[in-house]
Length: 291
Image 1 (cartoon, rainbow, N blue to C red):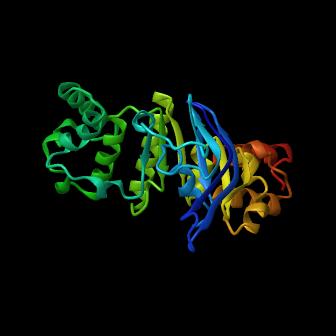
Image 2: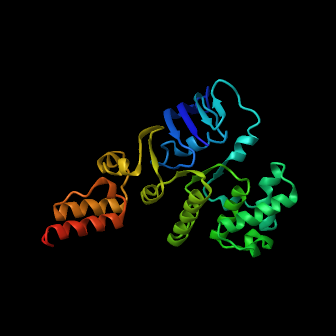
Image 3: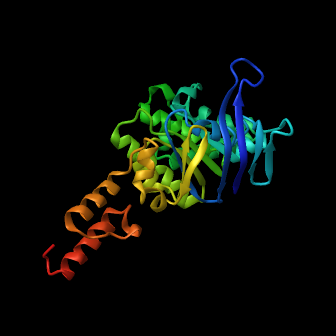
């Protein structure tokens, strides 16, 4: 499901002494089945953008088109239920939204709310619990008897049970240890590839943006400053540094090798350690090992 953002603007508390411009002149196109990362400092507008994707916020100017549905500042939107079924949002610490007495009931809540019959909702629960890497045995447990990482997976399973076409992730690994972060991000990447989900990731991790995304939007002070492929964005680290953002470790490693060895590594290899090592090995062979 393609998403088109045109001249999007959002102001909080309009016509009050506390009115604040949060977004302005935001333009972007997100292709169906793509993996997009949105990066930027806290307060740059990342979370405000994603709340427009399922109608939690509405534009004060401009428009956003999700599939065949356009939300604009010109009319107040009603009946957003169908849109929220297509666009699932995983907010930070989604496990805080668990409330049912069993995991199965918690996962079934969303589908039942959209009118899915009970037995079909239970079937979706069985399917989605396995999609997030948990066994069927967890369905009869209380979500509050699980570990923090397991609770987060249950919360994500509840969103997947609604079979969204777009999955929006707002800092989905916040609070997890390194292993937990890696496992969760790999799970999302697998879902993206196997199920063709469009994924929109809001993150402070340059490593995750470079490793998983095929398009990156760089936000600053409420608007998009840069956008392009990871190679485009990270091949010019000085631009990110001017915005106060860091670059992935692999980009720093590439720059260090180029400086020490006096070679230029192609931009196509700049985000892959394996390709960098392969290129440097070939360069060593071509120079007889004397660099």
